[in-house]
Image (cartoon, rainbow, N blue to C red):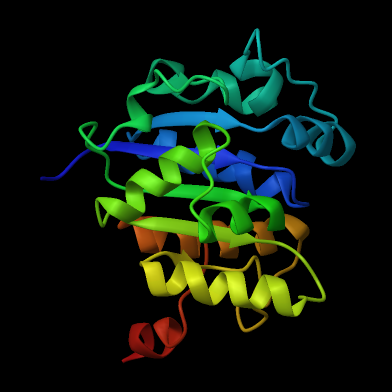
Length: 208
């Protein structure tokens, strides 16, 4: 059963620009996005992007900044991380997939071991048990043996581990270009069309 609904969770790893850009791309593509944010993500968003978010009084403008004026905000549905009554906490709520971007090592560990301490963990568990697309975007270096084993565990359970690793064959000119590459690869996994970067071999094909 196809669904236009997607779940996006933001946790407390470095990489706030990825999450903000991802939301913009998905909303512009006409997707209905169910968003949940961890307290640690609030701290990182302020430190990295200067965005001050109140989880109890959510504001799309506070999170998205100027982008909020050019995306369909009606398609963005916010769920507090404590709210286990949200639809995304149940397998009966059909979605087209879930992305945790960025995904902290603590969140990764909770998912790997089936610990549902908040809505983010629970929604991820639901996507695994219902065999729906779950994409985890870790941003950490170096990786400990514990983190590597947790990545193996979630991959074996059916998740896609998509580290925030920009490519250089696209010859990025700005930080925004590097962000777009990662966001584009996430969009690829979700089946969302985009033109965020030039694909390998694309220029050769165009020249034929």
